[in-house]
Length: 86
Length: 191
Image 1 (cartoon, rainbow over the protein chains, first blue to last red):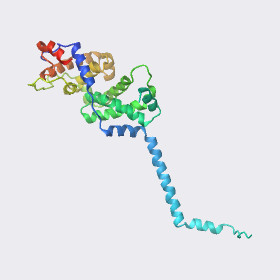
Image 2 (spheres, chains in turn purple, red):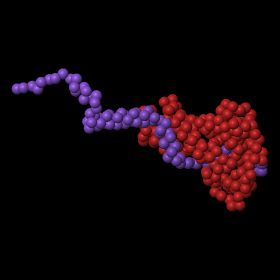
Image 3 (cartoon, chains in turn orange, blue):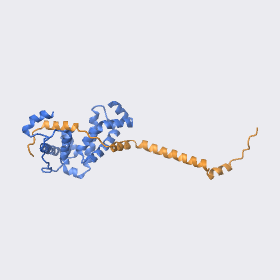
Image 4 (tube, rainbow over the protein chains, first blue to last red):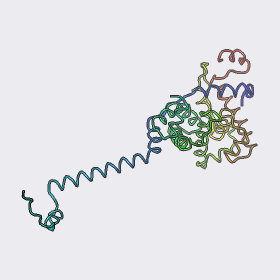
């Protein structure tokens, strides 16, 4: 090593000062990774609710447009109620 | 947003407060990771892992010291744990790299910039660099370093002495530090 050890404390101080000044800006994917890891429960809740609501809408729509045989059969088994006459 | 408000928001797992804390400290912390890591990509991975730990352990922060210092300790430990996963890292702590680094002499004296110093630190072999980072920059004692890296205290001391000599040599060759006879004038100029 050439000409070393001439700084001692000054050298360390300079290194510390200069490295402290240095900043780097991370890419957005780092925050996305942090956020994704912290809010997994929220994400699962939203995904679960979306699936549930979509399912309900699909089933309800289907029954409205073409009622299933099961519901038709159910109607037939209901006891006859004569219309109310006034 | 005040630091107290950020802290309270993070304790409630509020994403706005978490983002604010991340925006405030991530540039400095990425620079810390970069000094330990092999490349920028590794540094970002370390940063991500570190911040996940920061947010998940935030309830353990006691208002006794500086918040930044607490975050920094978590980040540094994350970096060290990542390095320790690599088998070569453990080996590098026992190796003496007497002639391991070839540095080209610069012909034009340059102004001392933080980036230049960081890049010169990154030229050092990984074992030297880690001990230098921990001792000279992060302020850990050789005892603490020996515990963190699972090495002898004497190994930490010798690695640091060699690292410092090698870095001085690199900085002189790159004209970032002056030769001894120019030292007095230079110190006035850079401060």
